[in-house]
Length: 352
Image 1 (cartoon, rainbow, N blue to C red):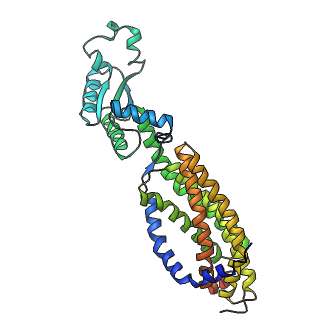
Image 2 (tube, one colour):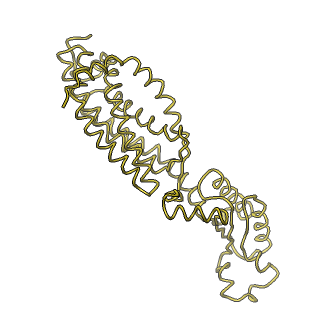
Image 3 (tube, rainbow, N blue to C red):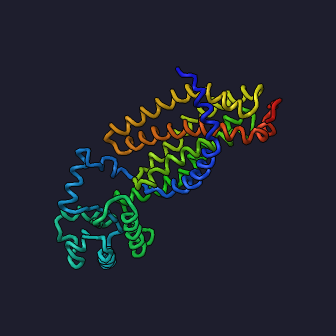
């Protein structure tokens, strides 16, 4: 293996422009990651034309148009109100058809005159079923707006007495649930890593520096789908938020441990240069494994979520390696004094 002496000098030489670039990218990336166009359901797992299921679905939609059905169940017995609700559903532009008892049979015909087998398709002991066909998909702002409008319409005629279900409605519920989980998942992940680093280094500042550097790599990784206009499945977003942090923070731990050892006998910038040379092989070995494995998974998998996750892992490993080898040395040197003041029993002789 090469000594990487020249590489370590190069890292120190470009530390200022790299730090400026890091600052310029970190904040926009943090903002961009929350503006990604997310897919929350399973409709796009095989939505790519490269899979048989995806190709078939695309061809069917092109031939017959997109269709999505939502079922609304309301208490039976008030045919006039059922008819009014059905008419209100039909006013919604995206609704193409409403199949209900009052639409097919009519409220003036007694239920006893309708054959039982046909009647039970739309009426049960307690509920009347309405099948609503829409011309939109099941995931996205327009389907979610339609599902919300259907709910509001049903609420107007049957306050808190209706039931509504369907893939678009379920996906809307999933979105509302997982977006709330995001704060909890990320909070626990970051908090756990911070606590482990706090115990390991007996320092308040080092965990903050290390977590910030790796989190910035995650933000930059997630900013790419926003910049490229890629629709990202929210499950992949949740997973990479924790996996990249857990899988790559050990690079930062390895580098920091070596830096503290070298710093005891060297000045801060010299210690950083030595540490780059000593850790680059270990960091690149682990990072290249994650990068190659993730990228291959992304290229070969026909499952949309797994493919996206593979690319995110591969790209995230590269970004984390770059952050640890180029940004972390400068951060440790710049905050050298703060690290000494906020760390238990950590003092260096050469404070320059």
